[in-house]
Image (cartoon, rainbow, N blue to C red):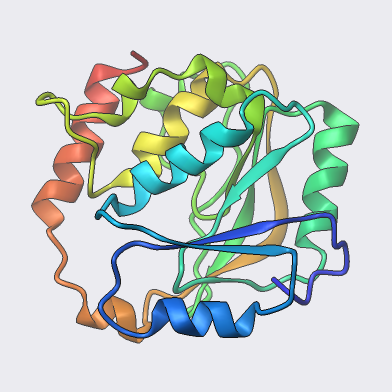
Length: 212
């Protein structure tokens, strides 16, 4: 992120109750750099609630573009910010996503989303660098992010987060340049205990329920 040629960005790093030295390391690496804000949670929120809670702080400003980057991934294109801002300005976009690369084989599952198609009924093509104009979130009720018991989704958050934003978008675009490195082979992934059942249940519920 520090290598971006266009410096018109601010990065919020959220430590979600880590049990190691992540918070201290993040503070050390960003010390004196006003482009970064480092937050340490006092309660576990998981990815979706963290992203939505932080993004809602900017949802009244049409000039803010929000981008979500997972902690173990990276921007792999030094022109990412420049590309995104230009596309949003030139085409008055509500949402945009880019091509990405898996670290193990260079795979990219992102692609075009047909203009008039309901994103809930389309294959998942908008991973991994998901961005949106902050004001788009204004039209999304938190109920879209909650399970049937009223709890925030913990797994499968990519689709729970982005499908309602895509649904509300008047203009959305796939950017073909590869801008995001998905570290599927990272140590953090290897050490994580995945609950595939919960993840798939989230995706199935979100898609079956549609926009709320």
